[in-house]
Length: 187
Image (tube, rainbow, N blue to C red):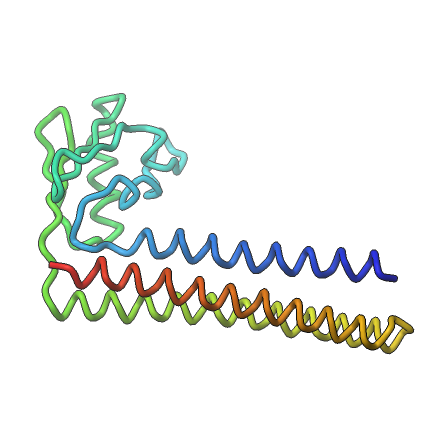
């Protein structure tokens, strides 16, 4: 009985960690006015009929804080790379010099910065909802185990452990969102 509960709790803790990792990935994809390879590395490019992540068909580097250079391993991929950037609707126009696709990231306006911060806060709230959902499931499992004969005081301790883990994850989410907000609002 206790081993089953521990397994459920471990799965719940893993689910919380997955939510944090997902938030980290989503926040890193929010453009803050600086060029970074992650902006385009996941874009799908039509590579001879099959959608392929750009990072698998080209070398993506930053030449300076605002410029991204995408050098495909095959020159015939310049057109499909440009097309995928246009289709991603990033608000950046690619420039092709016959060798490399260049992206110059424009500086963000104050209004755009505020919208990006709002978007980041929304991502943080989504992560918190995911964690709260996990808490609800774990608490239900603990209550069910107590009803089935698990000691009540041990059940209360487990509920306390779950709540402490939830509180720590929520604090971590708030820190991550605040850090990203600071990055975005820094001119």
